[in-house]
Image (cartoon, rainbow over all chains, first blue to last red; front, side):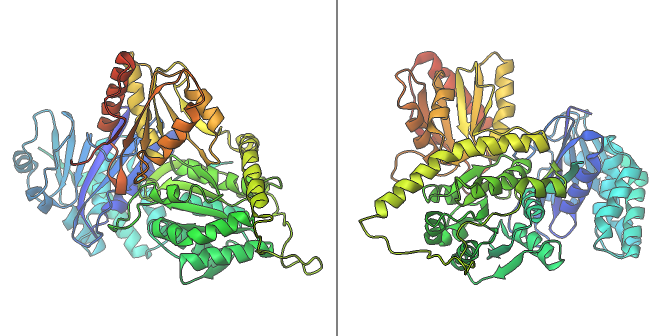
Length: 191
Length: 393
């Protein structure tokens, strides 16, 4: 991992993207790491495109502005790819994680990713519907992030999901989310 | 044991308020401070604090209720932003002139019109001369720490003045960052029992508040207020020393970053100071002697100490996240200029207005200004004294 890991999330209002960034930050706290999680606030309408960001570092994080050169770009809603250049500013060794049933090779072409950049896909919406009963792709995306970032274990992420969802949701919803995180971790494909 | 958490600035300040456990809170919601007060109100509702929560119909009423409760003899808090603080304005002077140690969490936001909910220092700057103490904070940790210290400063028997703690709306108030919470017990002991001074509710010792003072004595009251203000710095430093003992975190009247041997420097408030520090490190790596001064105690402003800290520099840029229309320069610039004026040898001083209405302050902006400062230091020539940056012209 680079000294500071910077993640940019692209999602739509109501998909749990901001929650995902928060859960990931929480899980990364262990080991004395410094974390940030923050959305780009605009008109907060369901379905409207939004960005959220994470920074994780062993050093104190002082930068208080959007992530401009992400190591990881997480696209929670692939329909955004038609309107937004999600590759903007991404580092040469950046990893793109796209919620899509498509083959990662197809997405690589669409993104025009550099050969040095990695493109991964996971059908997070399908996983969510099967486990949570609703198209909330954030939990499987967090699972993928755990795997790709390599800085936090799956167990730690699961523990954190349990903690952050525990206060608000029923056991059934919590279990569904835990399973969704696991399946994201396992089912991500690279191309 | 301190607890490591990942929380927003609003959560952190609400937590500080919970730990201090004030007697009364009167508030009216306004973005981006709504979330702070909502969290505190839930502490009240869930019995986590003994605070009496007074929900009012406006910020003017909120501050009025705070004044009443404080004069009655309670430890009192509130929080607001932007137009909310503007609507309190009249009452702010009454709180300070009556010497009531109310603590206000200000989540800095732009003023209307046009309507904008984002981070900007116009609200706090508009209230800078209202006789309150102002502590400004770079991040959630500082906002939490400043809030806890604000009670001790405001309630000090030599001071008895209201205090507001400032943090950037959204950039800090709604961003999750790692920080350390102190133990409930440690905060409780640090804040101590609230000590009343001439409480209205002490009916054995009746007192009057808010009398009419005509020309025969009004000026003496103002003079006395100024005298009290002059004692604040010392109290801020002694409270900071005590706070370091329980937290391990050092605070002063302002923070200096790589300033001692610097030739060029920024003076900048709140969250943008953090971004600037990272860019200053890059310039240092290139051999450019850059540094930074971040005011913490902004009112009363420590003119002498700031002047001493900056006088050796060749060129300084004061970055203001607020403009003072018609005053030629941003409010922070004017204070820094006043701090440096007494010195024969002083740095060239320029002013940049940035980040209004939540416009991003990016590393590239800091780079641009540092390059200009390096050039100014070399040539001794100022390109422009005041300029907007990050704006479409």
